[in-house]
Each structure stands twice: as structure tokens, then as C-alpha cells.
Length: 451
Image (tube, rainbow, N blue to C red):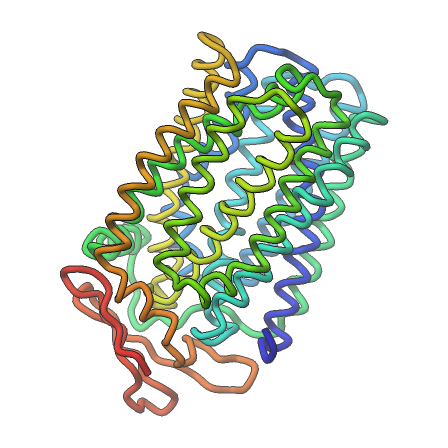
């Protein structure tokens, strides 16, 4: 992880600051909803509203961050989130909060998140080399789960138990500070564009690139399937802790903190696991372990065992996130990444509201533990499909780790990279137009030439 450069560390510190405050928010909103109602369907609707923007706006957001300075996009998104969550904090303090307002705030934060997340993910390949992507993503993922769950979750739950508005005010301040920290990244992160195009054309190009790439198309569709099962459980997670485990609201944060500990470990060891076992085996093992531990959660009401299972599920999920994101960043051209990632997020994260509503409806009709059992079983079956896909393209997936060339703007040492892409292939050339290694999505998957 050495040599990542000061621009990366500025992005990391900004993201970590935002994530720490965001952790309090992610705990406070479900607890606030559980204070206003115990209806599983109404509570699951909160998760649906939070992720509905990814279905509605991810394509537009992805196209947008491919045509503007990504640094400015991150600043604007953080400031919007600070104002929105600050308004909810004031409403809670005044005693006028209701479920409609909570839904509206969750939706607005989600819209801003589509901009911030798309810009941050697209910016990373501009700040580090391709062979540093796993290390960079590992650090960012570790900072994210460390802030959002391991530290932010227990802090948020204890603050909520004391004063309901406290974690929300903390979150608003954190977003404002994070926006200021992003400004310390001095580089212009506006992607280089050779021709003027419309937003609609950009969106269509991102969708077409993903869809014509056989491996990424299959990975996107299968990951979307796992997203439904995952958010069936996340939507009723607060009820699982309060009703199935019979714990307090403050203990909810501790349980999520245990999950955060697993996620932190997963973020740290993901590159090591990939180097030791290979990326194909690591990806398959991660998705299978997550499914098995989810099923096991449906079979226990013991808090200690549940904490361990949450930690294992989070560890596996973070390993998957780090490795799959690094894989996409290695395959998608830098100046196209926002659009392609927007397409990916629309297709994958767009299923989260469906999963959330399905989980709430299933819990209302049966029980909360049943949701975990069914979701885990479904994702175990999907894991078999991912195994077949990754196994079929194992050499191509493994070869992406061998790429050593710099990315579109190796900013901290002054190098520049020109990327020319089409659906048939992507040619990378070093500064001065020198031919570089070729990373080419063939008709049957990913093909890259080892350096």
C-alpha cells in the first residue's frame, strides 16, 4: 500500500470522515423509524426509499460525473447531504418528525449519494495505478466500514438513546467537514473528452459497453440477484435485533459494530486473500460464505452467535466488494467509468428497493427469521451461478491483477494516459502516445495480456 500518493490519501481522509458521520445516520434513521412504527412493511419502505434513487438517477449521475470535475461533484453532494440531514435533526429536536419526512430525507440523501459515490469511484483510477487499485479500494472500503459500522454504529445508537437528534446533527457536521477536505485534492479530476455528446448518448454508451461485455453483463445480472436477497434482510435488520434477539436500541449499534469489525477485517485482508487464493476463488468463496451465514442468522436467537454471524457475513461481503470493484475499475476505461458504473449500479442497486419491500412483506406474512433463511438460500443458489461464470472466465479474471500500466491521469508524478475505447476493445497508451499494454473485452469475456 506504499506509494499511493498524497492525492489518494486526501480522498481517503475525506471519505473516512464522511463515513464516520454517515454511520451515525445509518443507525439513527432505522431507529427513528422503529420509534415511529413497528410495522415491518413501513420500516422496510425506508430502505426502499434510500435506494430508489439508484434505480432512478444512477445512469444520469454516472453520465454527469464523466463530464464535470469529479472533485466538485463530491463537494456539492456532501453539502446537499449536510443540509438535508441537518433539517431532519431540527425536525426531530422540535418533535415534528414523521415517517413521511423520514422517507423524504432518505430519498434526498440517496439522490446526493448517487453523485458522490459515482464521482469517488470514478476518481480513484485517476489517482492510482491499475496495479494499486486493490490496495486503494481495500483502504477506502476499510475506512468506510470502520466509520459506518464499527465506530459509527455504536456511537450513533448511544447518541440516539440519549438524544434522538444528536446522531443526525453529528452526521450533518461530518458531511460539511468532508466537503471541505475534498477541496484539498488540488488536481482537476475532470475526465478528458474528445467530443461533445448529450447526456442521453452518454447513458446509452455506458449501458451498451456493459451489455456487450459478456463477463461483466453476467456478473451484473447475478450480483443484482444477490442484491435482492441482501436487502430483504437489511430492511428488517433492526426488527431482528429488537424482536428476535430481544436487545435494546443501544445494543443494536453494538451488533452492527460487530458486523463492522468483520467488514474492517475483510477490507484489510481482501488483497491478501486475492494474492493467496487468486481472484476467482476469492470471489466465489466470499459470496458463498455470505449466503451461508445469512441462512444461519435465521436459525438463531442467541445474541453472541448472531454477532459472530453478522461479522462473518460482513467480512465476506467486503471482500466481494473490494475485489469486484477492483475488477470493474481494471476493465472499464477511465473516462467511461462513471457511465458504465452508473449502468452497473442502476441494474444492481436498483434491485435493493425491491428486496427491501419483499423482505418487509415476507416478515409481515411469516416472521423476521424466515426472511434470513429464504434470502440466504436464494443467494446460495445464485452463488452457484457466479461460480460457473467466474470459473468459465477464471483466466481472464485472474489476468487483470497483472496489469501494471498507469491509469488515465497518474497525477502525483505528472504522467498522463490516453484511453481510446470502443465495444470491441480498449487500447491504453502512455504519455506522448506511446503504445501501451492492451486490455480488451473479447466477445467471450475479458482478455488481457499480462505485462
